Amino acid sequence: MSSNKKLFIQTLGCQMNDTDSQHIQAELEKHKGYTATDKIEDADLIIINTCSVREKPVQKLFSEIGQFNKKKKEGAKIGVCGCTASHLGHDIIKRAPYVDFVVGARNISKIKDVVDVKGSVEVSIDNDESTYEFSTAKTNQYRASVNISVGCDKKCTYCIVPSTRGEEISIPPEMIVEQVRKSVALGAVEVMLLGQNVNSYGRRFSDNREKYTFTKLLQDVSKVEGLKRIRFTSPHPLHMDDDFIEEFARNEKISKCIHMPLQSGSTEILKAMKRGYTKEWFLNRASKMRELIPNLRITTDIIVAFPGETQKDFEDTLDVVNQVKFDQIFNFKYSPRPGTEALNLADKEIPDEIGSARLIELIELHKRHLEDTMPTYVGKTLNVLVESLKPNGEVCGFTDSYLQVFTKGSDELLGKFVDVKITEATRTSLKGEIIS
Ligand code: SAH
Ligand code: SF4
Ligand code: F3S
Image 1 (cartoon, rainbow, N blue to C red):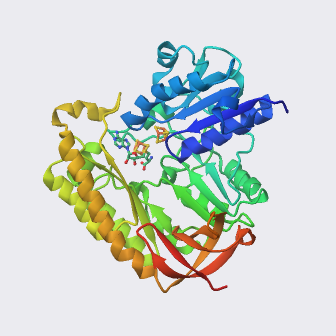
Image 2: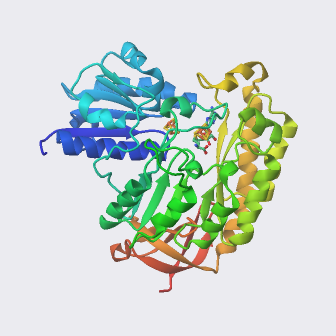
Image 3: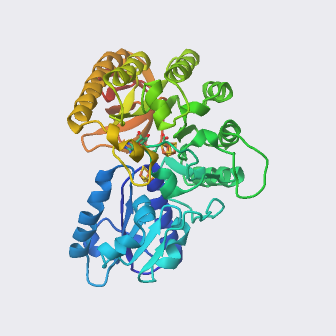
């Protein structure tokens, strides 16, 4: 369907939201004839795909849509989608009556039905779209993101996601493999498998089918011809069993960079967070992986100042950071979220200045680790998939373990794997010369 209607989407939040935005765009393109624009002033439809995981982005939402309302052209519509849409629902239109529709993170498949219905609100948390075939989502030229499940069955006590995305349902493996195949046919060489808890994949499908594990899914996806690299996020440390770790180590298509969200290094705090593992289990899993995979990079998420976190608890976190030497850390200060169990611990909340000081200490420690580890790559030759062209005559790409590498080059290199001898390192990226 083609028309001159233009769509502007702003995406906040995680990679699942990015994929949801791609789906929204593909659905509206196919069924309603919209094409994308990056200029709000030109848009006939403005969508903001929101995140609720911490309080800040929620506050930002209302100031942002207010701005959109001022900038939009006469008659343009505004829609609010995503996790904040799920948990605020009708209240969004009450607070901002110029919003035309609200679609929750669990209802993205309904987007084509609501865009033309002023005042519609679709936020049902039970909606099962695990077998809905979205119009093919766009990939970046070399990389595709493919959802493997919806929702999350965990009940981490700080987290709002289970109430914005609902119960966990796995997308059937044959649909996932087909989506990967389609993406490869469109030019992707790398796929990112996405779910809130990818390694509990297969526990529940919307039809009655036999149990099927994440490890099996990795094996099936890796059979897709033409696919060179598989990445996934987020795995849960509790479900990193030996089978999974061995497949991860053995399967050459799997990128050797893993996200292991620690959250806290204190067994006591992990218990209060209901994460289901101990400090020792986490350390055991990380060292087993490091043993089997020498070039492994490990990234993590850490929350500081969870209610009741003592100095000793925080030191346990620093201890794990010192032992594992993460290659990237996403640090967060605990943010109380509506409807979560941790709100019951409000009397144990940590003063903000202590939280900020802990965050800074953690960041500084991690910086020192990167200053030690990154220069060790200098002199090594790494295989790099070139993905983008920089204005200064350089190209940029990623290694198998997801290190960012810059080198001199032109558009002829885009999409190719090249060997780069590393000559310089910063804390976050490498520079080098192509040797083949
Ligand atoms: N399913 C993913 C996490 C999704 S949320 C996982 O379990 O790894 C992304 C990150 O946001 C979490 O890993 C956590 O570190 C952080 N986060 C979630 N809720 C938070 C809160 N209330 N305050 C601060 N950080 C939070
Ligand atoms: Fe939230 Fe925990 Fe589910 Fe991750 S696993 S989305 S942190 S409840
Ligand atoms: Fe945010 Fe929802 Fe993702 S709360 S982090 S957009 S699952």
